[in-house]
Amino acid sequence: MRRAGYEVEVFAQRTDERELGRLYPIEASITVSTGIGPKPLLGEFEPDVIHIHNLFPNYGKKWIRSVSAPVVSTMHNYRPLCAAGTFYRGSESCTACLDRDSSIPAIVHGCYRGRLQSVPVSIGQRFANEPVLADSDALIVLSEQMREMYARAGVPWTRMHTLPNFLPQELDCGPGEGDGGYWLYAGRLSQEKGVLELLRKWPKGHRLILVGSGDLEDEVRSFASDDVILMGAVSRGQLLTLMQDAVGVVFPSRCFEGFPLVYPEALSAGTPILTWEPNVVSRLVSSELTGLVGGLEDIGNLLDHAYEFFPRIRAHCRTVYEEKYTEKKWIPALGTVYQSIL
Image (tube, rainbow, N blue to C red; front, side):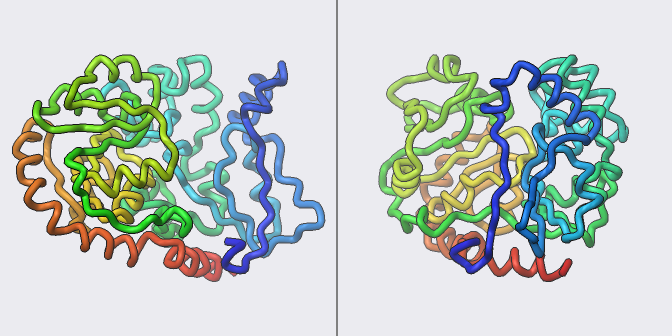
């Protein structure tokens, strides 16, 4: 934004620093459950627009109702509607709190770090009456799927603007040839990402490189073989190089997601995506024709089809990236949101 000429002041708190205080758990619980708590100290900075990205769990919310500048809030996940923030519980998608317009299921199932810590998070959820949702002048959502979910919770459709994540210009390393002979998974090694289901069904004779870390790392490591290679966390530059050379990026997430950055990253490298419903990437792939959407039960046939199909659409994937997911496209789209409330 500063590169585009905006004057920006960032107000932030870091949880890892706040956690050093002995009373932090109590302070955070009160802030999350009541909406009363620290607010940005604007001082002499008089903004034309206040843009909120994430108040959880360190900032209060009720101050939004008293500021004079218009407020834009970006929804990066589903936290105002779901204690877990993912609409995922156990081993499947879950919209129980949204369907019932109640947070009781989140407490019963301990969706945020167990039942005790789920209580203040769930109390603080008031759906359409939640200050970020009810009092922001505009809400930015990352996809049409996210827009639909927030509309179900009562947020007016016309107050929401769909503005997906983008790849900053310094990270665009250009398209590759996809001639590395391997498939790539890039993401957290966690239950909702579907990585274990992917590995259990992954057919022999197809190389799969996994990049990332998480609480399932030991289980994922047990699948290591000549075909399955776990690289752990890598630099962003190394990841994009791996994407350039991959036949395709595999995205097996089992939750809805917001808008994972791996999607524009893959398209910037000209690399198609292989994915499954219900995640948002499956919708994007279907509508933008940037890969294949199928099922794990048929993954062998999908891979065989992809080896022939994916090289033919690499140039198209790069074109979609340039038309929709660059910094150059994102900045004026954000400006349009700001102008709508000024």
